[in-house]
Amino acid sequence: MGIYLLAVASFAGLVMALAVMLMVAERYLVNYGVCKLDINAGKRPLELEGGQTLLSSLYANDIFIPSACGGKGSCGHCKIVVDSGGGPLLPTETPYLDRKEIRGNVRLACQVKIREDIYVRIPEELLDVRMFDATVESSIVLTHDIKEIRMRLNDPAEISQRPGQYVQIQAPSPDGDVFRAYSISSASFEDNVVELNVRIVPGGIGSTYLHNLKEGDSVIFTGPYGEFVLNEDPDVEIICVGGGCGMAPMKNIIYTLYDRWPDRSCWLFFGCRTTKDVFYLKRFQELAKKHPNFHVVYALSDELGSDEKWDGETGFIHLGCDKLLEAGVARQAFLCGPPLMIDAVTRVLEEKGIAEKDIFYDKF
Ligand SMILES: Cc1cc2nc3c(=O)[nH]c(=O)nc-3n(C[C@H](O)[C@H](O)[C@H](O)COP(=O)(O)OP(=O)(O)OC[C@H]3O[C@@H](n4cnc5c(N)ncnc54)[C@H](O)[C@@H]3O)c2cc1C
Ligand code: FES
Image (tube, rainbow, N blue to C red; front, side, top):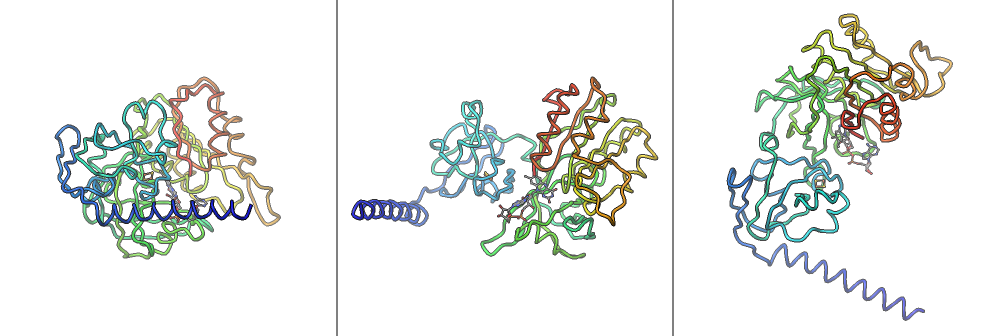
């Protein structure tokens, strides 16, 4: 038994040592020379040194692909079509790709290395993503764990964003800069500002960096990213449901919506555990006075403490949706919050007759 274990351990050690040697050799000894990177059939032809990942090569040429995990292969956001030159599909990619995507040559840009001429297709919208340099205008405590951070844009000085989109903030870390995704909470007509609602994650690189920012500090981010498109038909009712920092995209949707369609019907359902998690309630109540078709519902899921006062809804937020929404109305829904909340709300909304294609969500 002892000899057997020793043999297995030696073999595993040998395999690991070989793998490390291969990685080092590839990094320092293998020279792939200059490779062609062809984007959208000749629209943006590039020439670059091989050996880097597709994601970092694109980044070095100011083409910013969504990469919420910063290229670690753990978010699945960096999907692009690689028509040829990407090498075989890797086991690190398959968990994030369905059969249709695999058949359509979709790859994770952070996993594909450039070793030969490569031909890729990138949605035009992503080619418009920019890197912004901004200055913190204000940092406001909203709750015990959420801050509102408002940044004025310097260069470029304006952003064209749709509600539901997000930016990727560059945050310093001991191993180099990392990028983290944050939804834009400012309305899309505020084109010289990007505002965020950031929840602190204990020990988290991006959220700690953002929470420590002070007025006047510089911030770098790329964006905007995200495919959500608000239904343009004013007769379609908009339903926003979320909790915590999931407020950010919903605030953008609501203010953008009422700037454009003052009479449009919209519901905001916001789930909190206790009164300590409640924020923006008064400002939404003020907005509802100006726009009578705007309905604001905040619900507390925990028992009220002896020192807490509350005259809103109680219980989980999906129960509020179930109680207050009539069935059979033409609607589009945007959900943003923890996965369990989103799953429960989705079931309720489908029971109310909203088609799956009209329910959009961001789980975080
Ligand atoms: C499209 C999109 C939009 C987003 N919008 C927002 C937003 O508007 N506001 C916002 O605050 N966040 C948002 N997030 C989440 C955000 O991108 C970060 O993941 C989050 O701030 C944690 O990053 P960090 O660098 O602080 O933590 P990391 O350094 O990445 O992680 C530190 C530790 O915390 C754990 N961890 C990571 N995330 C969480 C979490 N959410 N809860 C508990 N533990 C965690 C990790 O596993 C790790 O152990 C969004 C994410 C996506 C994908
Ligand atoms: S950047 Fe996250 S999987 Fe590629």
